[in-house]
Length: 617
Ligand SMILES: [Zn+2]
Ligand SMILES: [Zn+2]
Image (cartoon, rainbow, N blue to C red; front, side, top):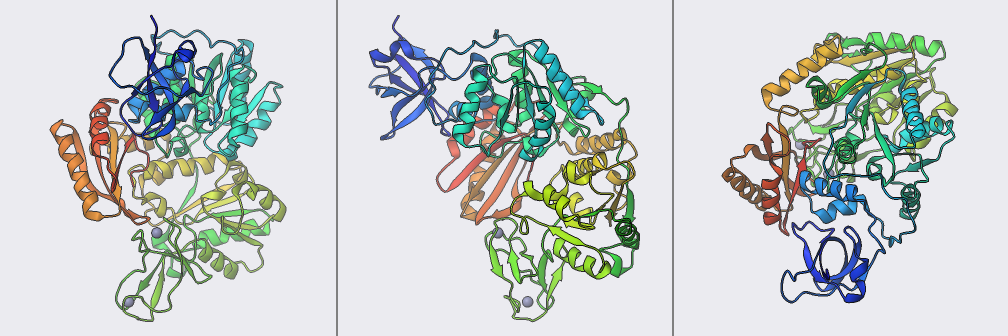
């Protein structure tokens, strides 16, 4: 039977496929997943072939213009993974296929090796939560060796580009074919690497997020390092979580997945507890973070940036010619300017968030990046007493220079620095006594250079407007603690010094407490969440739209939280409302949301879906 009709999925937010007639000269050469050029809304577009049919699905079909690829770049398993991404993360199949194979170059098949056999019934392969202690690299290298012996290939995922070089150096020692894959490579480079992987010439591929889709023909396992990192959550549609995609891929293709971390996400901890993940604790026991807490409430007012204990510790560190790292959660000199006459705060007109004040006399909105000269008088009442409230890295530097005039002090911000990758070299070269900065400094190799680390104001981390703030604060302390040398010390300054993240004495104690709170509040991991977010320039329209969505959801008897204005209600000139859907089980709500979202999204208000959202701000 001649199959001369095909359906095509485009990389567009459209919940359907489009049928075309296939000219007879192309009939033999079309496969599922292959890209074709088709007329669509008055222009030619590239789309993915989804289905072939011998019966005409409807009248007046347009004709396919040409075949963009010579063959399908997808294995059946990867195509199936795309279908799962599309249904679980609520995007079109075209968007999912495009995120797996985004290259603008025609795929021309050479004689590639076939993919390892794949049968369509999914096998439950083991998922391991590996806590390696100090043996992280030993573990990764031993797994790679084992795979190599079995003729299998390995994907090693890391949360950010900066973590790649260290893995690269360790793996290169094994003398195997290594591919390094990340978003900073040009599309051309990434595509040639993709081809090498497809040809089976790469034994181990190391890289960030989208490497999870690597077309290794004999894939043996995926290792996800620092699985708790929020960098594994994709920020654009489809907003997938790399760990979940890796696990799904493992199920489809029948290989194990290893989530490697010394600070498991609460979700993973919970799944391990329920027996869904198997725990491999390599060091035998977990090393709980150790630190000294300073209660800022008890400090004299003049010591509320540098507590007396911290001053003493820094002095000793500087005397010993060692390095102290001062982590300040915010940049700039002051968090905002407050008029002491009328009480108004100088805010970004686009985001309604207080402008951060910098010493150079500038104000910056940390949300949209808008910069302005700081006013000398209040823009509301023309009063002359604008008070600087709160403090950031510049203020800490200013105070440090007064307190430790002899010390070599360096503040490293992205403002001062051109890129974060040169930071380590710069620190090694300049050898400062005291380094001051934000999250940029919290990197394994930098921490290992310091004998004193101080978190200047822990409360900022605890009070982020996100239900996972406490968990993130825990990972943060854990990460610092894990990377410090044996005799180095960590000081945490906080007003809320009796918070359970600071007083817990074991992993179990912290996770159980956090789980208890999440359970009471109906938060993940006890409930699965999907967030529907409406954004637009006109407040009333956005509000109307989210109410329309809510009404439709209510008719389907879905449990809801909201609708409500987002914690960041206005950003970059757009108003934001959201509603959160909740269910005890994973994967129950997607169908309902899909139907509604594609129906309501419009020109003036954009409606987006985020499944298992990470930042609910
Ligand atoms: Zn005023
Ligand atoms: Zn702004």
